[in-house]
Amino acid sequence: MAQIRIDNLRKDFGDFTAVKSSSFTIEDGEFFMLLGPSGCGKTTTLRMMAGLELPTSGEIYIDGEEVGGRRASQRDIAFVFQMFALYPHMNVRRNIGYPLRSQGASRADTRRKVEEIARLLGITDILDSPVGGLSGGDRQRVALGRAIVREPKAFFMDEPLGALDAEFREHMAEELRALHDRMGATTIYVTHDQLEAMQMGDKIVVMNHGMVEQFGVPQDLYDWPATLFVAGFLGSPPMNVLFFNGTVAEGAETLTLGGQEIAVPVTREGAKGNVALGIRPEHVHLDTEAGYRAKVIATEYLGTTQIVTLRTEHGDIKARIPSHQKVTEGETTGLRFDARKITLFNADTSQALRSAGNEGVLSLG
Image 1 (cartoon, rainbow, N blue to C red):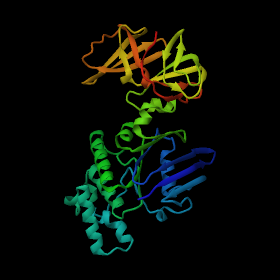
Image 2 (image 1 turned 30 degrees about the vertical axis):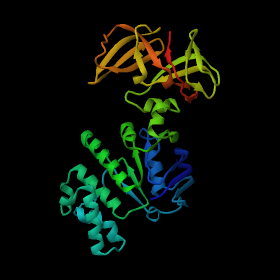
Image 3 (image 1 turned 180 degrees about the horizontal axis):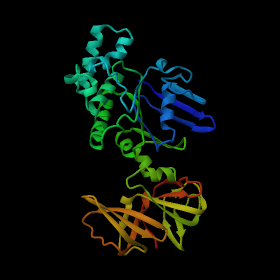
C-alpha cells in the first residue's frame, strides 16, 4: 500500500475552476474520505489522483513518486464506481479474474486468487452466476473483488454505495470498513453523505466550491469546525449558529454580548462586528433558571432523545434532550450552553476564532 500526497492541485474547465489549490496527505493504510456537496470538486480531485483527469497545475505523489503526468494504468491503483461497471457478458468468476487475465496470469493462479477474494467477500456461492441477475449488494461485492484481486497500491471509490437503498447501504458501509481493516489498504472514498463519512473514515477532507474547508479526524471536525460551512454540513441536526454584533479580543476567555460577560473558549484571533456562536444540539440544555430565554416552537421525538426547536432573539436553535424531559410547544424556557463545546466564528470571513476549549458552563442573559 502507499502514502498519497497532493500539493496545490488545481483543475480548470475553461473559465470554471473545479478544484482550487488543494493540498493534503493520505497516510499509508488510511480509510480517507473526500466529503462535500454535489459540485464541490471531490470527484474531480479523485479522478485527478487516479489519472482519469489531468490537473491544470499541482503535483500528485503515490508512494513517494510524482505521478501527475502518468496514465491511470501506470499508477497501480484500482477504481470502484458507483454504478459497478461490471462486464455483463461474463459471470462473477470471470469479472473478478479479468484484471489478472489481462496481465497474463496463469489460469491456476487466477482461479486460486479469485476464490480467495470470493471467500473474503462472502460470495463463493455465486462465482458461476451471471452478474445480470445479482442484487445491488452482490454486484458491489463483485466490483470490489475485481478491484482487490490484483492488490494495487490504493483503492479509489467514487460513491460506491450510492445506488443502494438506505438500509442495505448502511450494512455495506460496515462491510467495507471491516474489509479495509482486514486488508490494511489505502482507500480514498468520495461521498456527499456526512454520516457515511463519519462512520467509515479515519480522516476526512471537507470540500466546498473547489476548496478544502477542513482536514482531520472525524471527531475533531465535528467538535471544532474550522468554518461556518463545516459547522453546518456536519452533524444531524447540524451545529446551531447564533449571530451577534460584538467584539472578541485576541486571547479572550470571555465575551460581552448585550452587556453581559460570558465564558467562551480561548480565541486565537480577535473579531469586531459580526460574530457567530456555534454550539451542537447535544450541548444545549433547557434550564428554566437560565437567563437567556427561548420559545419552544417544535419537538421531534426520536426514541431515546428528542429534538426541540427554540426561537431566540438571535435566531432559531435546536436542542437534543432526553425524551422523558417534558417540553410543551409554545412555552418559554431558559437555555444553558456547555462553554467547553462552543466555537466562535468571524461571521464576515466564516473562519473559526477558537483555539482551545475551556472549562465552565455558559449562560446567556
